[in-house]
Image (cartoon, rainbow, N blue to C red; front, side, top):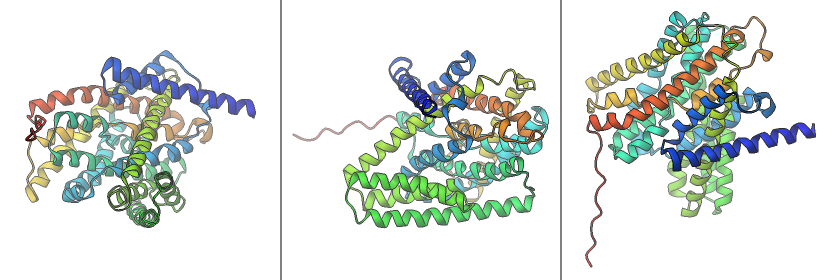
Length: 424
C-alpha cells in the first residue's frame, strides 16, 4: 500500500513538472496560447505512447468529475460581471439552453447516422459532452484585439451557462446509458428542469451563506479557504441531492464574484482568491490534457471503427451544430429584440472553441472493467475518446489560430486607447 502511494505521488510530481515545462515553452518559445500548446502535448503523449498508465495515477472517473470540474466552473463564474450578464441575458440564455439542446441533437444524430456509433444514446451522449464551449483562448485574443465589451460578455456568458446545460444533459443521458435508466422525452425535460432549478436555488443559498460569513471576517487566507469550500461544497451537496452540481457551483461563484468581491473583500483578499483559482485552473487544465493523452495511447488497437471517418464526421457534426445554432438563433434574436452587429454571428460560430469541459467529461466515461459486458460504452468508449479529442484539437488549434485574422477581417479590432499626457 505504501509503495503504491509513493508511486502515485511520484507520477503526480512528474505530471506537475511536465505542466510547468509546457507553460514555459508555450510562453517563451512558441508564443502559442497555452491551451493550444496543451492540446499538442496531449496529442504527442498519445502518439508517442509516453508516460504511465492512467490506472497507476489512482484517479477514478468519478474523482475526475468531482475534483476537476468545481474549481474550473467557479473560476469562470468568479470573473463574470453580473450587470453585463443581465444586460445580455436573453441571447445568452437562448444560446446556452435551447442552443445546447439543438447542438446535442444535431451532433448526436450525425455521428449516429454517418460516424459508425450504432447506439443512438451513446451518440447523443457524445453530442452533449462536445457541445459546451470554452472561451479561454478566444477571450485572450479578444483582450489583445480590444474587441467590444458587449461581444466579450456574450461569448463568455454563453460559455459559462452552456457548460452547465451540457453537463446536465450529459448526466441525464449518462444515467440512461450506464445505469440502464429509462429515458423518455417528457422525463428528460422534467429532470432537466428539476436538477437545473434545484441547483440554481441551492447555489444561491450557499453563496449567500458564504457571503454573510465573509462579511464578518477580514482574513485573506480564511476567505480564500471559504471560497474553496464553497466551490467544492456546492457541487458535492447538489450531486448528493441529485441536483446540478455544475449550476450550483456557477451560481455560488457568480454571487461571490460580484457581491463578495465588491462588498466584503479587501484588495489583498481579492488578489489572493484570484491568484489561487488561476493557479488551480492552470494545473487542472494541464492535468486534463495530459490525462487524455495517456488515455489515447491505447485507442488505435481497440476502436473497432473506421477512425478517420469517425473523426471527420465528428468535426463536421460539431461545426454544423454550432453553425445552425449561431446563425439561426442570432437571426431570430435580432428580429425580436435588440439588434446586434451582423458580424458578431461569425465570431459566435467560429469562436465556439471546445476545451477543458469536454475533456473532463470524456475522462468521466467509465472503463470497460466497471461496466457490464453488454453495455454499449464497452464498445464505443475508445471511439468517443478519439472523436472527442479530435474535435477539441481541431477547435483549439485550427479555429483558435484563425480567430485573430477573422477579427481583423470583420473589423472588430480596435486600437488600444493612447495614454493621455498629464499636465505638468
